[in-house]
Length: 113
Image: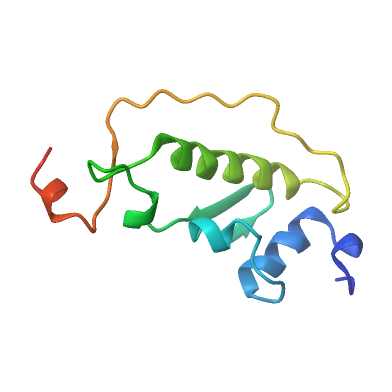
């Protein structure tokens, strides 16, 4: 594995984030989202459903759910790149929310099904 981000393949870069060898991605500080497992072509992310990400009614805002889907899609693609500076872009991302994201920290939403 290389000494700098630019020396790493896409999968080695994301393995570095998962292992804690690299600082978390910048949006982690805003959302708490972090990659927790990585294999070639797949990556698992987590993001706490904190009240800070919720609407006044207690549901996680759809934009944060879309961000999490975009992060997973883009980084899974990056695990297939031969180097970290490969040009990988998610060209289309769509979402249809049938039910709002539930915030497990909000007792009001615990009983709603």
